[in-house]
Image 1 (cartoon, helix red, strand yellow):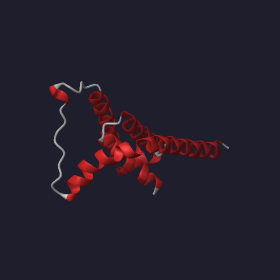
Image 2 (cartoon, helix red, strand yellow):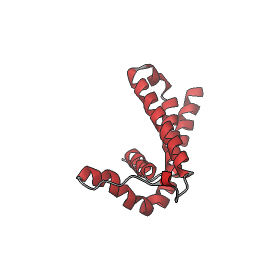
Image 3 (cartoon, one colour):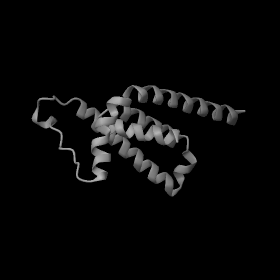
Image 4 (cartoon, rainbow, N blue to C red):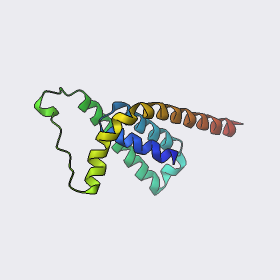
Length: 129
């Protein structure tokens, strides 16, 4: 549940053009993919590499979009859809939720990454012995 919460809230942050959320999502998935190196030889590994590429392009797009001038014509955002329940969940809820949970996500993701690093260091120290 904690991993699901991490990725869901990160997705909400990415949807709201948060550079921090995009970076953390890419870094976490990259570290997870690298330490599952044996799994990269299987078909599931190919899918992970493709998803990693998508996260990298998402990170790049978020950084590019953050440099747009608010008053320019290029910075005009597309209208958010509200017709169906799916539209409301994917377009409207992140806009409402992100300002309320942003600080919590910064703290939560930093702690999550720290525990992930601690776990990886523990695994590496046991394999070296």
